[in-house]
Amino acid sequence: MSARTVVPESEMNRIRITGVKAFSFRQEMQALVKVETDAGIYGIGEAGAPGPVVRGHLKVMEPMLIGEDPLAIDRLFDTMTSQMHSSRAHIPTVSGVDIALWDIAGKVMNRPMSDLLSGRFRDKVTIYHTPVEFPMPSDPDDRAAFREWAQKLTGHPEGYRIFKCGGAHMAWLPNPGRIDSRAAAMSNTLTQADLHIVQKGNEVIREALGFGVDIIVHDHGQWDLPTAIGLSQAVEGIKPLWMEDTIPVWYSDEWKRFREASRVPVVTGEKLETVREFQPFIVNGAVDAIHPDLVYSGGITGCRRIAQLAELYYLPVAVHNVGSMVQNIATAHFGAMVRNFVMAETRIYARPEIREMCEEEVPIVGGELAVPTRPGLGITLIPEVLRKYAGEGEPVWD
Image (tube, rainbow, N blue to C red):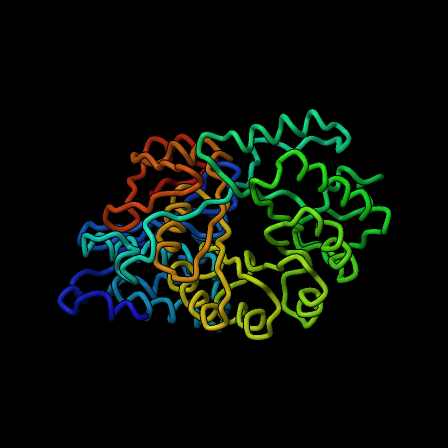
């Protein structure tokens, strides 16, 4: 749906973009983006790359944005993503700008951004938790340690009922250094003995957590096809909600072969960009759900196009998210406006700045986040907190 179908004509061409800026927090691989206008209204987004990278791409994109109407969102998205010469569009940066433009649109209209597109399908979104603050015990034979770990997860005051856990647990294998554990390292192989260890370890996880919660198995895109099929067989007994990113991210027919062989649902998408890269997975029946990330896949506009294609094939949308409060709230708005949305990830406790960076409380109750009702994103960033956690040498909107 075009921005021009949801913003009244009387509001178009009234304000202009005057500046685009970005900065990163310490030890952060994503950046906040600010789009300024001549009306004094600005929008905040989040991009899937560090501050210096995003600022470099924003400099290239300035001629496309400065002086333009920030409410012409679909046209600007198509302009930004159509770059070819002399460089291809940097979708993580486009994503940050797009989210900021929707923040501006909501502020101009005095409406939450999710109200502008669909009138909302829901006012709360289900959140699943990647519990990085509660490291998994390293010894799968220590049942007591696993019970204590599980009690921390299931007793969390925000009431999460879905948890993402690593799939192969390299630390449990003999000589784990023989496996390239870097994310997306291609075509690693596990032996049957390795897979037996993985199976037993995952059974310990399920025993500790019980069947009152759901488990997502994350495999980081590093396995060859025989290993992926073996992993699906190894974790089948714990009844995961799905297996995520088990083979390398790029599409091939091996994804179809994997899905056909697996009795565990297959999901991918966090590193894919725009609807073009999701299309073969969706139309070829290679996944059971899609897992885009707003800051990598195209922001609100790009991810909504992805979700609309998935809806035609009756595929649910679960959203990847390891970012700041800006990405968490943008993801919540996206979840409110997309019919086939089912849940979103959060690492809201992973770093202190996430909880401290905005004035408003962002409560999660019973594993659900209430979508803000204030204009735009509906959050107000605290400049002192941004400066406190800014990376070394990173400008805070200067």
